[in-house]
Image (cartoon, rainbow, N blue to C red; front, side, top):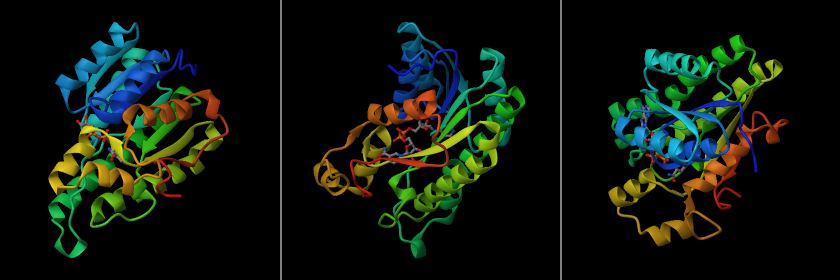
Length: 253
Ligand code: NAI
């Protein structure tokens, strides 16, 4: 069993989907968990679940696209748990589905502000804290298969998720000398509220979509991505930095 004993961890977007699965898994592994999300009601339920399982957790309301809010998130983590060892920058919003010539630029900017700028802001304050605290931390930025190759008519999301991988590699280069590792996870088709919402919105058949998007012919459970986050967060991945771990059932192979 991989342990995160004596580590404190922020997970953004932890009220639902992969963030929630990661928060629950980190709690079981012994981490002190910061469930960071805009959705207070669902976020508090995750905290209660971790506590009822014997773990330690707090909820912090954050909008990752807002600099002051992200700064406060890191401050509240340190106030509660004394330090920051691990962060999973996972919060994001759903892609729009239009080719570039038809895109709604307001939505493009909104998506960038959460899915790309949100990761940059989280990195800024998490790295500052880890540096000041002398912490040999581990940060995981959630990208996507859309960060590796284009998807039909998804310009903003594809650009943002490629950007997340760029930020990951840059941060790894700059902060590895300080002992801080930064990696990215690139999930494929994962069965979460975000995926189900997109399937409904665009009228895709779930079974067909799963076959097209995975050699394994099925969606993954959020927990299967949480496993990858756990390994990257832990000392078991001590020589891994600046990389992208694809959790996509072979889709990008
Ligand atoms: P989800 O939609 O189930 O959950 C996202 C969470 O982020 C929600 O709790 C939401 O309240 C929170 N959030 C949204 N905007 C926020 C903001 N500005 N500040 C703070 N919290 C905010 O998403 P899911 O599916 O679990 O996705 C998690 C990550 O994985 C995202 O980065 C997503 O782009 C990525 N991903 C998802 C895939 C899928 O198939 N579901 C595939 C590839 C990547």
